[in-house]
Image 1 (cartoon, rainbow, N blue to C red):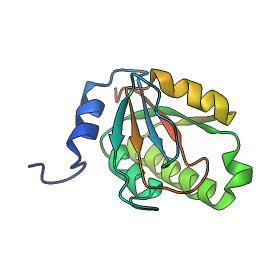
Image 2 (image 1 turned 180 degrees about the horizontal axis):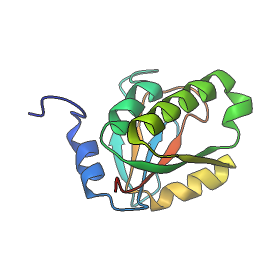
Image 3 (image 1 turned 90 degrees about the vertical axis):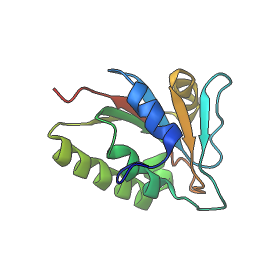
Length: 139
């Protein structure tokens, strides 16, 4: 058993197999998972686990180079968006790099998930609480 960090074996496996520019999606309970993309379902009930609870565990294992969110998030969920940006800023400081965050229309976001290594489904019930994390290299 791992003594610290990410304990979820399927997520740890996917992260360990990721190379530079590969993506991993962390999504809310309603985000559709495209056929052919691995679904890692963490959802237990409404809100459990929350998106913002899962994200730091993944951040502890994945060197993030860039991220993509839905452009609807800042206006539709401003408080959630601000919390997400704070977590990304903390990761930038921990990793010592700048993480570019771009936004695309939600429909385009869903199309981009088709090339993800996996979609991690949380129990989050906040609309647009989804992110694509693109792997970088720590050297």
